Amino acid sequence: MGLSRLVPFVVVLAVAACTSAPAPTDPAPPTRSTTTTSPPAAPSWVVGAQPLPLRPDGYGQVLPTPKPLVNRRLPTIDRLPTPRSDRYRSAVRPVPGDVLARSTWRGDCPVSVSELRYLTMSFRGFDGRTHTGEMIVNRSAAAPVTRVFKILYAAGFPIEEMRVVARSELDAAPTGDGNDTTAFVCRPAVGLDRWSAHARGLAIDVNPFHNPYVRGDLVLPELASSYLDRSRARPGMINAGDVVVRAFAAIGWKWGGEWSEPVDLQHFSATGD
Image (cartoon, rainbow, N blue to C red; front, side, top):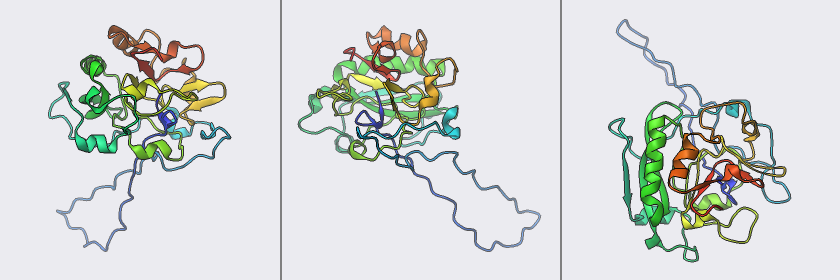
């Protein structure tokens, strides 16, 4: 499962920052040759801006989905150079030092740095544009994972964000609105005292907000309750037998949406857990 305090399970999620336009100075009077443009519209939702009140178990309170997120189609924030063409591109290489430094890897993780690989892959955003994402996975999964995301790209399956989880997110206050498609996170399994498959780079969470984790009264991300209604089809959702499930099944990975308890709709793993 993913971050939203999805860390613990990740789950906390990705914090996006925005700045408002500066107050205008006194402009010169317009002339016939002067063209005016409207300022960019304010974002409908700023991810990570509002920490949630905590439950006794340390997760955020599960609250109704805010109206701007009921049919979530937030634009992608580009952190890597955008592709030069619409053709799918991917690359696999050892994890660069600067990427490792901002990741959750530490010396007691159950996987060595040499067992991990750094992927960059094209993906389609909810804005309809092509973007470049990044991911750390187990060396054994690197080539198969790039094939999966090539299939999703060709199918036009939208992804909001694909980036490496930062160390600071593991201890950040939950905001319940994260939506990072990611793999390696050095953390225990949610609610358990053993390592998650994410800690070995052998699990991937896809669009966590559109595909929440559910266990009893806990929903992660905590604001994603609207997406528990799987009969209401919306872009970014994963359902039994669809292109996402089939693509991961083709490389032998299992889907957490088929579990009975918990149900982890975002989660795919090589280990089945």
